[in-house]
Image (cartoon, rainbow, N blue to C red; front, side):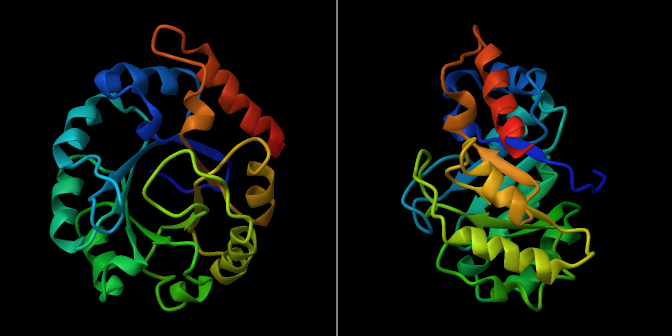
Length: 226
């Protein structure tokens, strides 16, 4: 997985047809997605319950791009190896989910995955200050984590800009998760983001039997960013 700052769209399979994940992943990749985003929620750190390592292992053979696994769970450290073994290319943990986030980033890299650090809307950019040499991605939550389809929190655009300045020339992606649409994508891209997670904005209007809208939706996001 090489590093570049070109715009990447990472559809969240939280908005896909749960009974047809393999075909859904093949459809979004055929329609031009860059990464596949997997939202892991535990019903404890966030108020929803979704996927675990067995699901990641089951869908891994269908993913030809990048499996981007976002752990919204606490505790987190004891599950890192399982998600790495399930094939995650990127594993992202929340700074708010553990008292020892530096150790968590070490563990993710030690397991062979790229290390992502996620920040909730109320967490300042400065929480990353002493972690920038430990991470490969910073995920800015532009909604409160736990559910898809929420409205974008505009105060987070300023946070993205702060992070871009803090990162400097380090090879660190800035990912946006929540409320990404053709209207909000240009705001975060201009501030410095290069990975856009989009769920309903990609999957709306389409299906495995009619995947063309997936491509249309992704092209609309790219066109808005310019």
